[in-house]
Structure formats: C-alpha cells, structure tokens
Amino acid sequence: MFIISDDDRTFVESNLVTQLSGKSKIEDASWIKPGKVAWDWWSDNNIYGVDFKAGIIQSTYKYYIDFASENNIEYIILDGGWSKSDSEIYESIDELDIPELVKYGKSRNVGVILWVGLTSLNKDLEGVMKHYSNWGIAGIKVDFMLRSDQSIVKSYENIAETAAKYKFLVDFHGSFKPAGIERVWPNVLTYEGVMGNEQNKWEVSHFDYSDNPFPITPEHNVTIPFIRMAAGPMDFTPGAVTNVNKNGYNKYVKNSGFSAIMSRPMAFGSRAHQVAMFVVFESPLQMICDSPTLYKKEQETIDFITQIPTTWDETVVLEDAVSDYIVLARRKGGIWFLGAMTDWAARDFDIDLSFLGEGKYDIQIFRDGINTDRNAMDYKIEKDIVRKDSKIHISMSSGGGWAAIIKKK
Image (tube, rainbow, N blue to C red):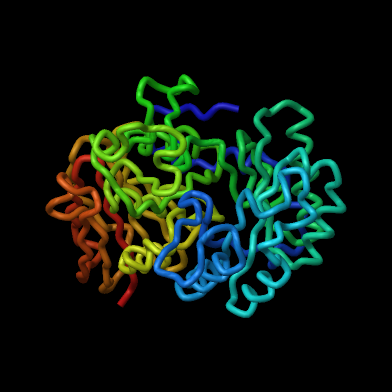
C-alpha cells in the first residue's frame, strides 16, 4: 500500500494501515489496558540514593513498582537480564522472584511486563505463555526478530493470538515493521521498528545510518512522525531528562562507544522536546525511558508526562513540514493535548484554538526556558485561561519543544 499526498499532514493523521487490516478476533477486549511503562533498560537500572546495591534484583524492581504506583504509571518492565539466560526463559535469575514481584505490583496497582527473545519464545510458545500466565504477568516484549520474511510475520500472528488467549499485552521490539495486526489482535499495542532513544546509548555509524555517530537528533525526531509513524504505533521510548544541545555529546562523551554512555544516557534536544514526544509520538504502550531516581529529582516533568494519555479520540495537525517541525493537537474525551517539536532551527508559531468548544479552558504549558539554547534541560511551566478565539504563541529553541494540556473549566 501507499499513502500519497501533497499535504504533509496526511501522513500523521492517516490510519489507513489499520483500516485496511481485518476485523478484531478478540470479542471482549475490555481486559486490554493501554498505558505507560517505567522502563529499566535505558538507564541500566542506574538508581541511587537507596540502601541497596542497584542492579537486576528484587529491591530494584520494587523501587520501580513504588515509583510507578506513586505516579499513576500502569506498568513496569523487566527487560533483558531477568531470566537465567536468553534461552532459559522459564526461570529468573536467583536474585529475582517474579511471582512475588507480580504480587507486590498488584498490591500497588502496577502490572509487570517481561522481555523475551523471539527464538526462545517460539521453541515452546504455548508452554511459555501458560507458565507466564501462572506468574500473573500483564504482557510481553518480544525482541530480536531482525527480519520480516513470511515465517517471521507468521510468528507475529501466532504470538499475538496465543498472547490473547492468556490475556497478555504485546510489544513487538526488534526490527518489526507494523502492518495493521494491531486491529486484528488489539492486544498488540506497539512496535519498535524505529531509531529511537535506545540508539542514544552508543555510536550507530557502523549501521551506515548516517555520517553522524549519534543520529537521533531533533531533525530525525521530526521526520519519523511522517514516515515510520504513518505505518502504525512506534515504541520510540521518550522521556529522557538528561538533555543536551547540538554539541552536547562532544562535551560529555570524549571516547564515545557502547560503555561510555550505557549507564548515564542522554538525548539531543531540549527537555520540552522530550515531553512533547508523549503527545506527538503515538504508542498505546508508551515507555518512560529514564531512571526513576532522575524523575524523582525532576518531579514537575514526570507530573506533566503522566497526565498525557496513550490513546486518542481525535488528531489534528496544526503546523508541519517533514524533517523541520510539527505542531499537533490530540483529544482524549473532553481534554486537548498539544505537542510541538522543531529541528535544530529555533521556531515560533501562533496557533489558533478554534478546535475548542465554547467557554473557558485552563491551559498548562511545558515549554523551553529562556536559557534552553545554553542548557537543554531548562524549561518553564506556565498556566493560563484560554477560549476558542484565543491564539497561543509557541516559541521553541534550537532542538526545542512545547506541550500543553487544555481542560474545560
């Protein structure tokens, strides 16, 4: 299939891939709960200020569960490293007790998702799913597909169907490209298939992706909504709170490579740029990538992010140009969420709020600070009252962003 248009907005607003897919095979989908996930892998479980040695241990994940519960985050994930090995996926390492973690999570209203490799999962798909169901987990993140031939695509369908039988959510990681299966099996909430924040942890020039060894730039980030996201939900894993300007990696990573930034990763662009991703980037299962310890120090940021839903009733693109900038509005119920992102060029927009209904609305804004051009972590939160005839001025720094939540008074 092709989506062809002379209007860039089409590629963001279109849901053609899903519309062309078959009808849902899950009669009662009420158990499928989209939401956010506190992710362990990006920060390498790098938590501190605690009274235990951080790592892949029970105390670390109880810390994650507590953080998720305190901030109304629906899930945590145990990524690679929880099992005896990538091939021994029936047992956890000795330092973990998965059923006890699941029980603790349920007591705090937090579900547990497990990472698993495709090859190991497919060796005994039914047996593994039944075993995990007995543990009481909420879903699986399947990794290392690495190709899209017929046998692999068939395995996606088998996994989705078997997962639905056991009421598991599914996140297809690896190199999967979405093809509408999320309509047939709505328990499939998201896919990677994108150069996301994960790729900020190492040089990627060896993939021949670009001449830039760190290509996950603001320009990249305002390109993918028009190309990759047109095919379906994308698990970019936003939410980095260590933010750097254009020359930031030159300053912080002198000997760049896998180990140099594995435990303290950072991301190009401003803090507001990362926050706006939660509105702009569509993913019903949305990873919050950074360390809970850092979020606790940046509570204003996590408080704003956790107000943003992961599914939408309406999307309207207000301003856009592929690889340059995007400004869009999404509605969930009676609340509107606005997100704006720019490339390395600073930009200003005046936005018409005529899509609002009658009456007064409270608006909460998360924007670049006055010093964002010097320190990408600078931001400002503002509140105001607006109407449908109001105009909002959006000013974004180089690599910047802007986000807003608009609620009826």
